[in-house]
Length: 320
Image 1 (cartoon, rainbow, N blue to C red):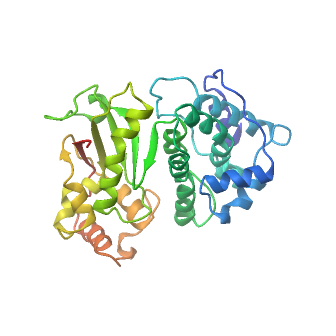
Image 2: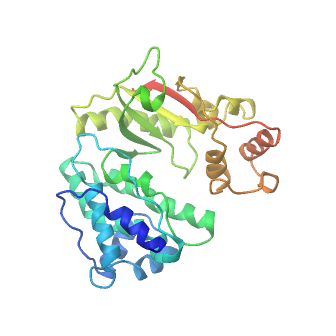
């Protein structure tokens, strides 16, 4: 069997579900969806040229159908984990854009879900445009078109994650199995929490973050009234307290850190830092050649060159 056969077999062995089938789309409709998803024009030609169809590429179409079934299988608070490996290199552009095709074709299912939940369309649009942001990142990393953050976008398309202004909030439950700890004065094992994520598309000013936090509890109370979110959690290199040694007290990162009460382990996350600050794929790049144009970039490089490591911090806060 070829690598492609093995990859298709892995996707098709996923358990099916009673979910409406995907429908083929016209080029005009696909282009409209790409715009809503924030996919840049530079990638439209490649996405459209390799978009699978039931007749032309039946194997890829069947794999898309099965992934769509997995995406929308019923679950009260949907799991965010899927087993969707990257397509093999031998598939070329069709493989690199396979999961863009999935989310493009799944968009009506997401819109129907958001409609049932009465989600405002501006929130829907802001949320799904993260796909386009990840396509942009892929081109920065590899200097070609593609997308490899399919596991991350599951949150958006299952209706667990929503972008409210500057920040993203993801419906979750704090468990000791996942967090390896619980807070002393805040959320405990089994507590519903909103996991906070920070898109990398602009400054995280205190004012913008304040506005997002003010929106969060009313939003989730209105659309998920049975879940009762009182706390937010955040696990990110941005919460590494070592950053305060390199950045001024007035920096947005240091001011963001002060919002959180730390708890739990702090594993190394050098790859995460290099990915978000220097746009390097995990495990690549020569530290000595990295740009040092900003205070943050200089801090990242200096600390690594001295033999240090950056760590993922974890914190909680009470939602306003």
